[in-house]
Length: 518
Image 1 (cartoon, one colour):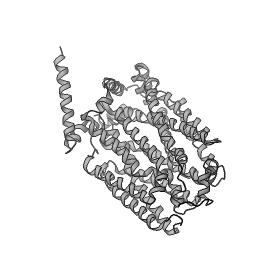
Image 2 (cartoon, rainbow, N blue to C red):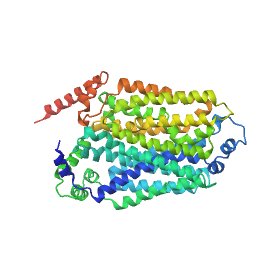
Image 3 (cartoon, helix red, strand yellow):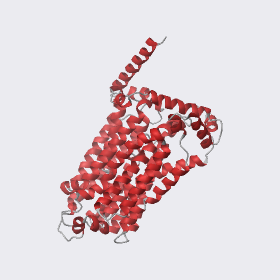
């Protein structure tokens, strides 16, 4: 570990290229957040419903008698939201190979092109086919940008953090991307609120506005240089060294260059990472990384982010009031994420998650109880009761945003060893996208059939998550990444046996190397 002075000296200056890359990383988060937040408000707009989902529009306007809980039960309407995430998964698969073969710069440019093409198609859609196809292209673009971010996180950030006390700052730095996602969600909800006042084409404005960060991403991809780690990984050592000097603003980058070269060599030596990931010694990391992503969705957060306007209209709010309520929720989401940045490396991961489980369970059961008691198939909630539901949703979002929201990405990024890190993060992200798709595609149908009990369903999964965290999730705060096996898994009452198995394998491999050495 370098001294603070050494780290500062070796790190160089904050150059234009460093700032440009930081802005691009932030733009990737804004893109994804905007698309998470935009769908619920758009689907609640009368003009959008009337054009693409006239049967839903007739129910919502009261032209057809319908159960309060079933007004929006429409598989095609849910597909508008959910299609983004399967396309995002496909995009991340293609992006991974693109980054490896052609570099990050090309991948970022392709992300912007797919994204802008999707935005153009969706915003000018004349029929449902054009709308869904546009949504799919936007999803592919998001998949590219998310994958590029994770590759940056896995390769560039560990080298940088190793020079600035990673055990103390790792959590806060990694949550910054999540903060950008929440800002994107807030931006989307604000745009929806104002666009809904422009009838009947305000929804086109909401979808088209996504082109602003997409254009920034595309122009940025033309301006920036390729990353040193990507160039070195693809064998362009001299060019990688030149770029590293350029972005650092100094000539003396020998130590960092050596670290990047070594990291690339270590990654190339890691044979069959997926096979190793499925082995017994990798069980703790894989189970925790996938489980956190499953809980992330089955505790109900994206239902709130996707369908909050629809939910508030279901309980009796008019369109404008429901959209304004979601803007407030978006602001709380951002503020609570800032709280997480402040507390994650002080209070620790487990404390934030356990507190949130209690708060989320109380709010979900309270919402379910109120709706069960007060909202029948045909009535509307009193204004005071509706406001109470909004407050409970805000408290729920608050607890999620300072805990599981950022930590479901932070914890997987810090627990996998180098040889399985890329494969492990891919499995984690894949689990998230699959369950996001399933929840988005099924919630409105679930609400129609289970009614208020839908919130008890999510509360049940919150209890399971709390038990999982309490029993199976060890604390990783303050533990250097390369010491996880010994200090975390090796001391855990259950995961210890898997860590011991890993030690036996490494010992056997070392013995084999010694035996064949000349």
